[in-house]
Length: 121
Image (cartoon, rainbow, N blue to C red; front, side, top):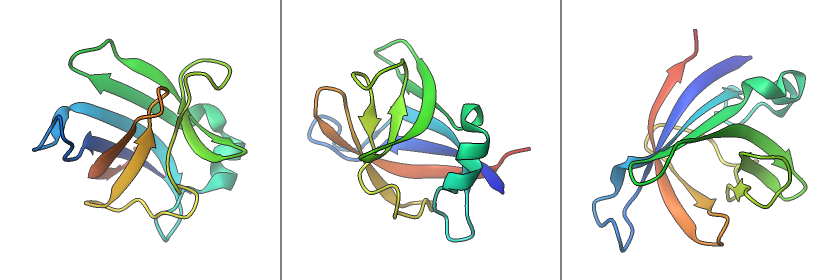
């Protein structure tokens, strides 16, 4: 398995026309040879699949990348009230420069750009 550290940064939105490096996620995930999440590796070691949400205007949030009946999500506390689903992540390759959509707990959908992708030591 090939565990990576992945940084997502807010892409261009109406409120942030240039995007924002101060609104980001740092993920630790295993990726297969095509850049998709290796679900079997996550299942073997779910505590290693983590997310850290850091926005300059809010306290950091630390949680896990979990697979739910609706797909992959960021989860910070037990239950699904705070989950942030990631649109089509089960079939989307995570590659430098690509975009993914994260749904905030309030239902707002935000675009994020994969700003860095590094091997985990």
